Length: 305
Image (cartoon, helix red, strand yellow):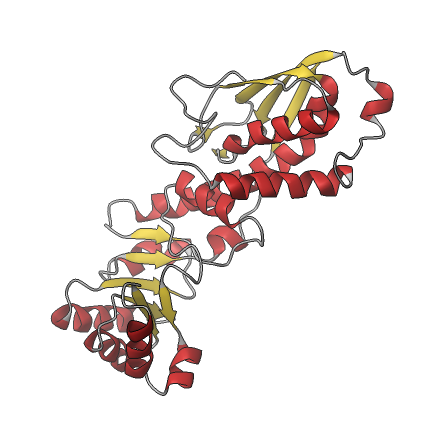
């Protein structure tokens, strides 16, 4: 495997550890099972028409402008496909890493090896990289809209099942910031938890008693809820569905009594409103659409046999 210069993993976002390796291995294995059938599986067309000894070169090409993500998964796809077909693993030369802005026609990477492996790998690697690059491209629009405001765009748990590690990595590639990874690393007290516990304060106290080291965020949709939450010791507030003037008032009220509490706006946020919301003084804008509504970035694998 030929790596990009100075890259610990081929194509990884510079300075980033990349997506969880175990999650990527499972994702690729599942995707190949879908395409080839149960392991080792088969490609009835490629394995009928192309000799195992035939080698070729393929370029991964951008067919639209955007931000690249998911290239780090390509070597995993190539390795797993080669193992299933019992053929040599193609070499990979990465020309631009994840996180790069790319233009239509740019060659992103070059793959050289058995044509059977290249063609069997094609759809899986394109699906993964196109999906991740779409998330990164959409995230970059939000990051650009917030540039200079001091506020950052965050993702949510509204991810595609099985793709969370990849999609959250793609958010980072686009200049966004990951919020919690799951239900295990940050407590999020929402309206249903408050209803079950009896009050915001009771819910916070219950979490703190059982998990004293876990950060607590509270969703608040009124000024009173926000102030009760910070008085009870919430570490973060999620200010939900507030018109801009109301949001600004709540931010000012919270800052007056708990200046270090991190504040996050969410609900009905649009790119057009991004800077307006940021001027209220919130630290973050939480946008589920980064992962649940991003269109893919069109990529192609052009073979030169």
